[in-house]
Every structure is written in structure tokens, then in C-alpha cells.
Image: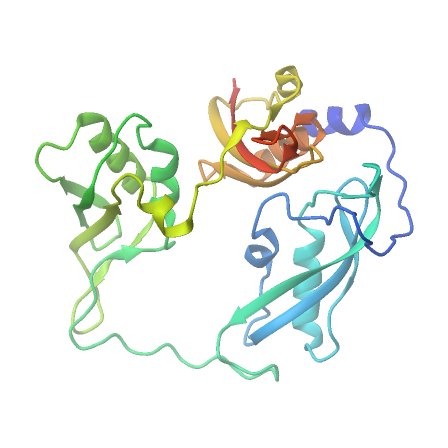
Length: 323
């Protein structure tokens, strides 16, 4: 892994830190390469928290790195430092002038803190005791199964109505026996099994609050064909999806000692700029995630083509195999 990153640094052109400029009409605004990176990277100082909305201003250089982070003065110093460190630890798609050239620019990012604690260094309240009736098992990362199932569900299967899958969860949060609805196709059963097994769980709690075994139920509602279109109007369509100009650029990714594959979803702007990377599996090591995003950001992309034959923003996915 270190040799891969070193080779990328040696072959890349030196990056000159430029004086950032303000975004103007027709300019492309930078965006997080991995959506939600800053929010996930913020580590609050012990005993401090915040609630409300904060707009952070910072500069994005042509290589996608962030610097010169400006946090509103009303935010306590320790929290401001945590926010600044998170911003600098994430990568961004660079700003582009109307002529398509990359440029260092100033940009802003809104952040929302949902804990109902004022910015005053107020100690966090003690955790509330469990309800008298106890709690059932639940996902440790809400939405994990949905994300896993999105990549594993067979593309040729159309299901309608509610499907409920039950799985035993031990007092240690480990999954056990599954219960599936009858007549569920084998490939769908396999997709559900792998998706549920790959996510972490909090065990059930007894009335006294101690961890105990229980049954976790995952329910998903498969809508009938046409429901989404009727709810939101005509579904957006494109004549051609976004794609890599030259897939051979992926050959630069050769992590030592790593065998497997990853699926990356990426949004490609109308200008051919890749942004908003989403990587599966989620437990990919951070160093490998960064290497993948660096390689994909250096690749050239063809934007999607709309029904009017003009370039348009669109999503696509890339499967990366390494061994």
C-alpha cells in the first residue's frame, strides 16, 4: 500500500498551492469525493457537544485538498479545531472555471449537529436507563443493510409488497439462524443473508438493562412498477450513462497483499468531473479507500448524455479488482 501511494506521488506533477478565488457564475463548486466524509470525520472533544447548523468556509486546492478552514467565532475553540481537522482530512473535487480549467477556490459546507446541547462546553448528560420492557436487537449502524442490499440484490428480480426477514442475534451481537418468507428465490435469500451478516448489531436488552439474545426483524417494502414515476413525475433518463474514458487507468491501483474487489458508485458532472464516491464494501481499510479515490479522481471520465444529446450529470458504477 505504501509503495502504491509513493508511486502515485512520484509520478504526479508537483502541486502548487494557489491563492483561492471566490466562486462566480458558471464555476463548478467543489464537493466531497466521499459524500458525508466531513460529518463522519468530526471527533468531538470529550465532554463537549453542539446542536444547530454551522457553515464552514475553506479553500480547496487544484489537487482536491482543503486548507484555510474558517469556523464561525461562536463555536468553541476545541470544537472548531475538531471541525477544521475533519475538513482537512477529507478530499474534494476541485473547483473549475467556466472554461473547464481547475482552480483553487473558496467554498462553504453546512454542517448540522443534532444533539440538543448548546455551544457552551456543557457536559453530556448521563445515558438514559433502558426502558422497563427492554429493547429488541437493532442495527449498530442504521441503514447498513439497505446499503449492502443495494449492491447485492439481483438486478433481474422484481418483488412486490413487504418482505420480512428475521434473524437471531446473540447477547454478543452475533447473527445466528435466519427465517425467510416461503418461495423467496435463492439468489434473493443469498443477497439478504450476506447483507445482514455484514452489518454490526446491538443485542437485545432485558428489563434490567443487561444484554440478552433476541430476534432482529428486517422489513423492506418493494413498490409496484411505476410507483416511483407516478410519485415524482417522469423518471429522469439519459441516452448514455457516464463512463470511464479509459478503463486502463485502473491498472495503477495494485495494493500489495490485498485480494478482492470493490464496487464504487460515482457521480460524474456534466463537465466530466468525478465526485461523491460511494464505496462497497464499507469495511474497506481507510488507506485503500483513499488510494481508490485518488486513482479514480485522476482518471478521465465521459459525462452522461441526456435525451437532448447534451452532456449532463449522472451516476455510474465501477468494479475494481485487485490481487
